[in-house]
Image 1 (cartoon, rainbow, N blue to C red):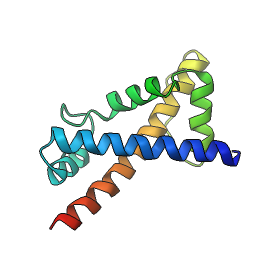
Image 2: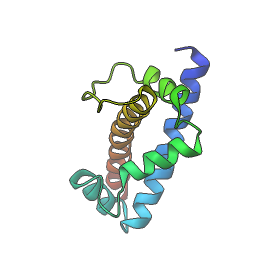
Image 3: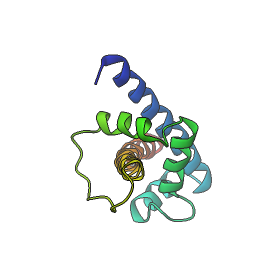
Image 4: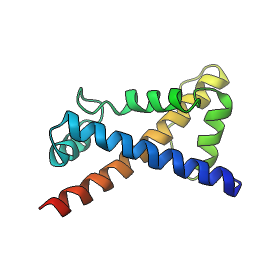
Length: 120
């Protein structure tokens, strides 16, 4: 991955984490509740990790083969389960969303944990 692409990916990840944390804190009435719910069920009504990843892919125009390859190239060292068989574009997007969602969840968890430590 070229340095400019890495910079763009890092900006994307930072922006996604920032937006997601803000959303979680508001929907869950604080960082502690958000962290607990993120850890217990990332797909619950107040967390909706996959829905957020879908929205980020739409907002940043990544819901296509090229966008998926950009994400997968940045996250090439991650391990994922095998995707469902199907059209290559669909499989690439599904893998990219899974990989990005996994990283987003991890980074959001870290951010919320720091947030709760500093508030107490």
